Length: 151
Image (cartoon, rainbow, N blue to C red; front, side, top):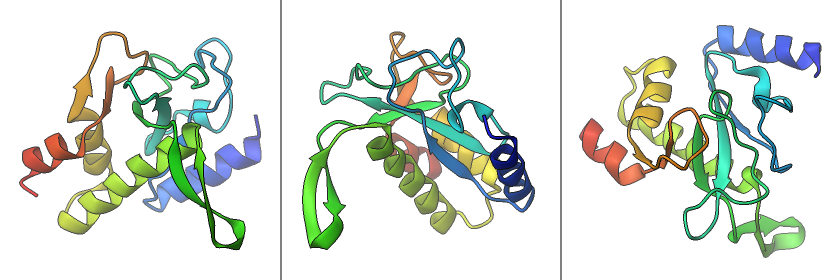
């Protein structure tokens, strides 16, 4: 754990920055074996785990009932690569952009929302599953969120 990274994130959060971070790909419970920055659990932090194509927790994704906040698709995601190429990749780093983009959409559509409201909206309007091992018991659902916010 890097105290300097935690302090820098805390300083930026104090300047109203929302941090969306990958949970990590060790397949561990962060409550028992913390990895950072996922396990910092700062007020304006969203930690994202990865789901398989069947919407199950992917075997490699870290999880936690308190430190991982939401799940998003993370397997077989087509991403850009160096030299203008593309590749199908898997990992919590592939899931995290889905949540970051959702936050950006909310901020664009609801500029009066505080970042706490943005974070809360994302975590409140999820598809839930009792088998999901995360704080919201849910996965991102942009349609549900858009309907709830009138977007």
